[in-house]
Image (cartoon, rainbow, N blue to C red; front, top):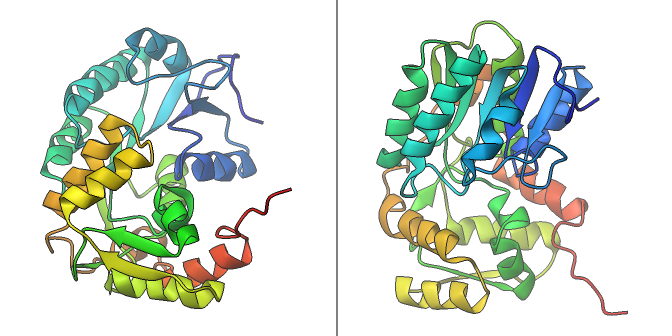
Length: 284
């Protein structure tokens, strides 16, 4: 059972506990019977990265932490927040930190170093672009609209499934052998965004196409969709700076951590389609 208001010892805190990876980590920990606490602004005991007064209460009784910084470690002020949070976590009795980091993001490296220098056990998951960004993020609406317009050109990306990330995070939080490891995780194939969208189209049986656009057009579209300023800035950074080919190679992080190959993007697309992730809502 998930713990919220109670403060027994040996709790595992999952920050961004309702997000793409966090909620999956929570589900797995609960299945294992691990006492957990959800770190979320909407939780009974709220947690907000932008409100430091919420940090000490959420850390009470916590010994292990899955750290996911919202919206991303690359945004201004992230490293300062991570430093302050990690310092407080260690002071509060935390013994293990598992950080979700970004692949190819130099700004995220500083946050990795903070965790690595905390003086307690640590594991870093350095992830590439999530497959689930197409089914659970802002791109889901693009898929539903039939055209995924992005400024990604022909750059290839080794899309990683968040189910793999959650499996590794839980292993690092609950098993021996993962301390001091940096797992750079990718999927098993390099795909352009056009190829990825093509696989989604095939999986859904619907016509979905990819359209390359300029960064200016992309930002205008995000503003029209009502995407918040900070998230627009992050997406612009990712597509303008990180999506330059630096991540166009595969790594063995998933296999090293879990002893099995990573999940393929095609499997993700078929399973998401079967689950109704891209089912259009009908008016009633």
